[in-house]
Length: 112
Image (cartoon, rainbow, N blue to C red):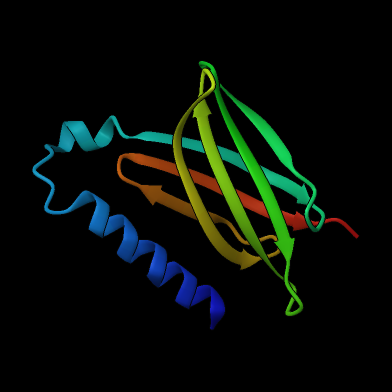
């Protein structure tokens, strides 16, 4: 239930930031999308992934008592903050975060 609540809140924030978009299909196709892939997470241990082009995704995971993973993500380019996002998902379940025109896909895997 927490996953659904978090996703609903995140989606609501994304829609509030974007508003009524008048982008064409071609503009939407050019959306900034990065797939971080599967990342092994431990509670509180920071992870950084180079996304090329000077872009870096920093993830700070928090393993919850119910086995889910709460992730704080920061996306930077050449040291400049592009966006921050927060999402909760289960281990080995893909999470997709979209803020404005930036989309990040990540699948956390809890280290044994």
